[in-house]
Image (tube, rainbow, N blue to C red; front, top):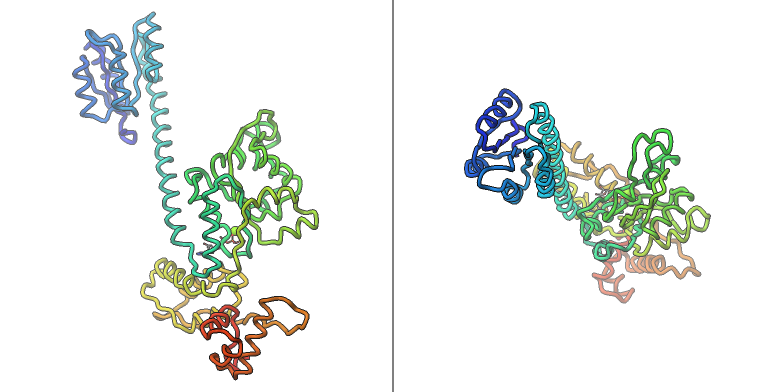
Length: 463
Ligand SMILES: Nc1ncnc2c1ncn2[C@@H]1O[C@H](COP(=O)(O)OP(=O)(O)OP(=O)(O)O)[C@@H](O)[C@H]1O
Ligand SMILES: [Mg+2]
């Protein structure tokens, strides 16, 4: 359809005088008109031009105008048709409208009538076009995002592989609610998006909501929508998140901060999958999945009566915990390589290499801000880096080895005791790793893995 150019109109009527007059009327306007006085002529013009609108007389000699309408709607579904009928022929008009005619005009008509009919059709055509454009854009966006996400979820540690497997399981159960826990910056929203875009809900909305960022008085209307006039400021009917997410995913970030009165309402909506807009009485059915996230200990919230236990049970049908980056140091290297590649492209610094000492330095850093902190420090390092290699001076972090636990005879904590034993063995073996492994009765490679995992100092000078 040539909407950005002139609208193309074909006038198909057996009265030559009429087609000429009407065509003359369109001259110099925003419309480009074509004339045909027989069905055969009309078909030729339709085939050769990208016609937007057909003005069709349904009483053509020898052919049934309704048959032409039927054919045209099949062959050119995006073309609109205004029919011209004789006075008193309401039967034909009704049939034509059922066959998909957009409007009708009764002969004789005034030019202003046709002008109005065309403008109405034009608005409709433009709306259709915008809708189509939006649909195309939307599917492009989700495709783009999908590809991007796939590439962005980085990690080789068994812990992160497990998280990824759990995310895929969650994607395969699109009705199950999912709770994602983990420290700030561990990738909770990232995982939520992966679940959504790998699930059958992917063509519908993923809506991320942080309720602590919304004024409390507006929360209910944001979630449930409202009816026009239900409160000051409700100037029109509005859908809430639950309705917007119909068939999609509602991502509730930082659920621990959600006010108690809203928790009760969310519980009901989640159980019944039916909501009522503020100020309205009718019930609206909506099918959404909730993925929620928190970096707080939500069970503490339950103990302190700040979070409803019944809502927690509803939300954590599936639970995914993302370990802190310091608990999976083997992911630091691939993440760093990934972020260097992303930012060196962005800042046009190709061929940047990373000095080995950078990896050593970062493995010994605790990353309280997790992957987000690593991403931000890499971005900064690349902006400030002068040469072709990123060195330790580009990463101003103080190595903070994981605090080694103090021996406590009563402790049965496996991790702490393992750490203490490894430390003792290393000291007894004078930091000879083979000898220390022999003391511990494990293979040297196993010891080496544990040293890396716990960031244990491996020489006296480092103590
Ligand atoms: N495994 C990963 N691979 C690639 N990028 C990651 C990974 N994990 C996290 N990121 C990136 O780190 C940043 C922080 O992630 P995200 O926003 O998902 O964290 P979060 O857990 O939701 O944090 P918060 O609790 O602060 O909201 C994002 O830019 C995200 O893309
Ligand atoms: Mg987040």
